[in-house]
Length: 199
Image 1 (spheres, rainbow, N blue to C red):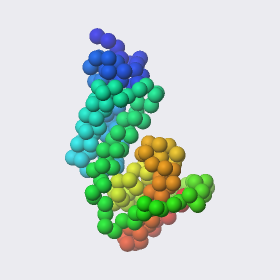
Image 2: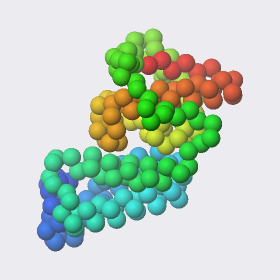
Image 3: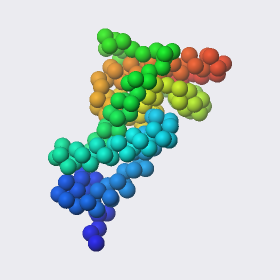
Image 4: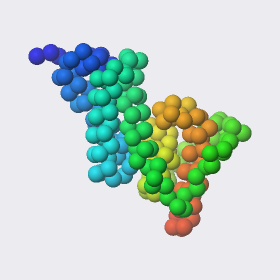
């Protein structure tokens, strides 16, 4: 029996393309927990998360078999991008009526990312105290906004990385963060919660 432990995900993907089906089993085993956790955090529904997870791997198999994967050294990035696209497709018809969304011509280029990301020690302390409340408020956000907050605060990704992963511009990523914060603050006021998350 072949030992796959020494192979990278990218090598396993290429082995699968070459006809080694056990290589895909190893690839699935390595990535399923992290991918499912990401999906579940975004969709907040176990049934939907399971559907998205399965759809993601069906699409991965299809794309691998069609030769639409090249070894770029970023298999997990590619995998997460596919899951993200499936989630966004599912949420396009389910936008909340009372959620602030940016317009198509929204231009946030006048915002500087360093202004948004310059968190001093005091802000870090305050943010740590309210993260529990923030996480609860995040459940009520649209998927795109919840996703950018998750990627920024829980995966510690830069806005450039978030933009690349989600297939949008940096300004759109910043905009989603901005609207997520607006929505969370509004909900905090409605529920008389003391919430001060400074970016």
